Amino acid sequence: MDSDIPVIARRLREARQKLGISQYALGVAAGIDEMSASPRINQYERGKHAPDFQMVKRLAVVLKVPASYLYSEDDDLAETLAILGSLPAAKRRHLVEELRKLAAEAGSAE
Image 1 (cartoon, helix red, strand yellow):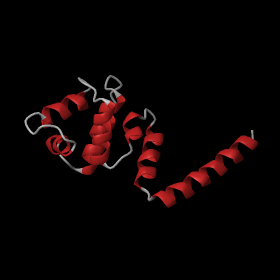
Image 2: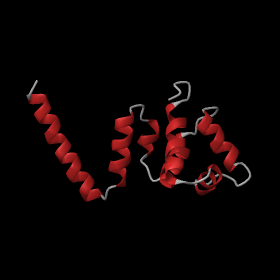
Image 3: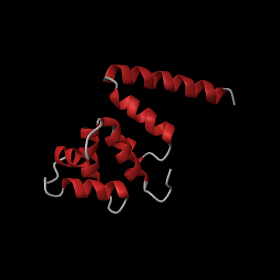
């Protein structure tokens, strides 16, 4: 992992590649003008420029990940966020409740 690349740039590239779409397709789907879609996503992925939060939200929708995934510095947390974001709301609430129980158990074991 290249530590010189901002986390948002790395996560953006990872999510785009996992989805199997081009920089151009991602940019256009996120509402970037067709003429600048590919160069702009390329600049985001190289860390030359950072998208503002409104753009991050649009990119996250296209990439099918929560916006928080794109900001997560921890790989396990990022994966957890992506998984949680892919679940239906009822299953997500159930899983969050189970996580609360685990956290409470871990806290009482200390």
